[in-house]
Structures are given as C-alpha cells and as structure tokens.
Image 1: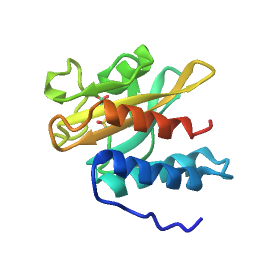
Image 2: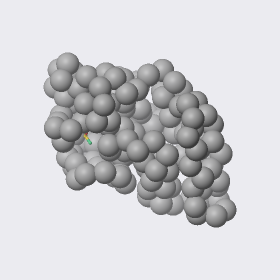
Image 3: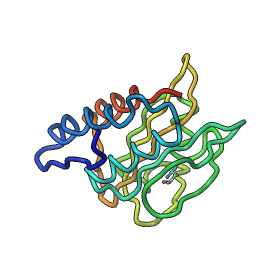
Length: 157
Ligand code: SME
C-alpha cells in the first residue's frame, strides 16, 4: 500500500474507523515485529497527535522500551510498577484520567497528564504493552480501549 497515511478530522470513532483499515494494510504481509510496532506508533501519533505513543516489551522480568513516538522515555519498568507494570501484572487495560492520582505512576515526562495502557497477549500471556500518554487530563475512555484493542489484535508476535 502507499505509505502515506490518510488523516481525517471528525469524532474519535470516525478517526479510529478510518485508521484501522490503514493499519491493517501496513501490517499485512510484513512479519517483522519491530517494523510493525514502529508503524503502529507512527500511525497513532500522526492521526491523534497524542504526546507519547509506544510499546514496552516483556524481556525476562521487566518491560523494556520498544518502538515509540514522542520524547525519550524510561527504558525499563518492573512488573507491578507504574501504570505499564500494573497493566502487565493485572493483564488488563488501565485508563488513568489523572496520572497524579495513580499510586506509583512513573513520570517519564511532567507534561504527561493522562494515560491508557493496554496489554498484548499471545497464548494468554502478556508479551508487551502499548502505552499512550496525553498532555490533557482525562483524554482516554472506553472508546479508546475498544479501538486500541482492535488495533493490538492485528499485531502478531
Ligand atoms: N507512565 C508510565 C511509564 C512510561 S512513560 O509514560 C512513557 C507508567 O507509569 O508506567
């Protein structure tokens, strides 16, 4: 497919519905995980303009920074630590409307105000997480959870 992303304005659902087929096109036929994770972060950042979009990958007993778009970030997060480590430990999506209210939140940047973290699964095991940070409070809701989970389901380990 053409590598130019078609960006739309409109409500969030329209934006996701326009973006998802394009992400599917980017991933189809490409087996390289790093390439695919990198393009997913770029596509999300380009469409939504969020402050930080990136993957952390489980390596031994830690999450290690993977492909991302945005400012430099913490490289290693232990299981159960911060929003990312908690999402991994609980194997569930966490939506944090105000990061200052999340006990143990890891502040890679003081500009990040709200966050959503979603686990990636293979055979019932979490192998990584997608972390999205916004400079706005209360940026993410159940709609983001639904559509971001659909996007993550397109990624094959
Ligand atoms: N805030 C995250 C750490 C990762 S950065 O935001 C990129 C956390 O609490 O796990």
